[in-house]
Image (cartoon, rainbow, N blue to C red):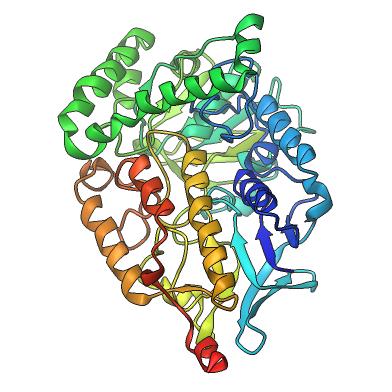
Length: 489
């Protein structure tokens, strides 16, 4: 194949659509699951909903007559499948192809992509689009394997299990937990929420679109005008995240505290739910229903002072020695989005492994390409996450760089590699700028950081600046790998 795309979520779909528009049909999409679609087809837990306005959280070329401002999982799944069917991407996809190893073959000047089951595909270029939130993590709580009840991660919600009237624990208090908790609180007998660190919560400015508004959203001109309005309304937040943390306290932390006081009357519970770090340091939750759910009489919030000591056959023993009897444990414990963002082995030129290259911390030029890894492109790679706008905007920016890189490579004999100096300069700039942000200095420890302490998940600036850099392809930042130069000579 000319191109192998790993993953069939929005990143993979965007790559495939861009290739088709460039007249490139010789590509394959590889999906480890028995179905396509990525995040919004996999994460179907109760209450799942996007936290970016739907008209912006969508592909620019694919308008959708959304039913509400913040789409729920079912509508996002339907949108995803509509795109897949429109571009006939199922015909280009190999399902149940769980990539285990990707290795660069110097002699053949291509990648050997191996599946866990042993199947092999050869491709000149690899676009890795598995997504940063695709490898769920469950901490190794003492005794976890002994629990005799039902347990699963929100990423693998078991819809065959009826949780109604059951004793349930939700471990975690981040974005997924904030959606699950209100969705199930009134249906279970008891709900125990184990919170390591409280999150700042802002009201969700949601609204349902009337039929005539939905009809207008189907018009590309109006749709794009709305997208731009939402985009620029969100983009100003970078000033607060990076340049003026005081703005975060005034425009976000004050409203968040007001929201907390208005929805939680119990003073003790309110103290447990009040963060001790600057708002924005961790992901901000947007919810109108979380606090009322946590205030219910059948819901108990366990903070860090009453965390999990061990898991037993019948439930959880807390740090204060309380035995919590349970029927179901839901792990809402996040994903390995930094050090383990790529879930398979990659071996580049000169047998350099990605693990070795990232031994200090994950890094990449434009968060997309790496020296010693020719013809490899990472979608939503290191430092491409965005805390104030749509991740899809960044994905589509990456596509502009990737398509230009592919054209340049084809003119140079079919091989492209970013230079070590260009990657080093870019990475140094990223972490120099990162020191100015609330993610670095906001007083919290979040999943945005790798084990090294570097903020890896986020891009430290305006998303339109990133797009400009991605669009302005610089040939001088790229070189032919040594093996290619020898063959050319």
